[in-house]
Length: 211
Image (cartoon, rainbow, N blue to C red):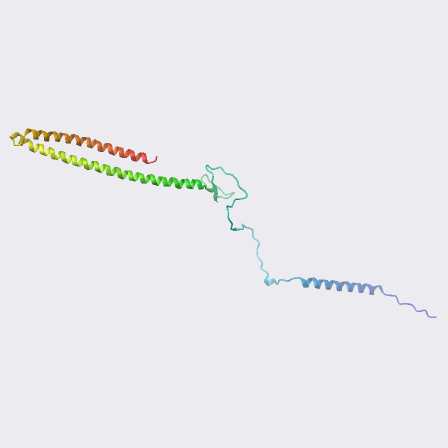
């Protein structure tokens, strides 16, 4: 009697089925992943070179900005640095200006001093004008005195022959003679007074001018 035998399953068929299933799963996952990503065209991309440098940032705000790294420097007066001229590492000379400092108190003091100086200069000009006017008045009086002296001197010379002939009394002649002498003395005193007045004016001007 013939015995029927069951056909044996081939191992290669089972492995092939597993491989096909795995590949199908990978393809499906890759398709889902790639469809969710965005793509950029090469023509739309911009390429450049990365550079390093100082980035200037402007911030609007109220108040006074202060550096977070403050250092004390030696100065004759307290001041604020408003400009850095020489950077770190630069070559400097003996007279090189490294920083510019500002002190509001000193600026105000300078403005006040300048105002006082202008006031003193104005007072000095006024004093000089007053001195010139005073000197002109003294010179005018001296000129009048000289004129009176010359006139009296001329009258005395003209009267002397008349006094000899008896036309003019001797008393009138003596009066003219005394007046001439008196005017001559006054004229000399006034000349000295003018010299002293000029010296006083000069000394007054020198005391007003600062050394």
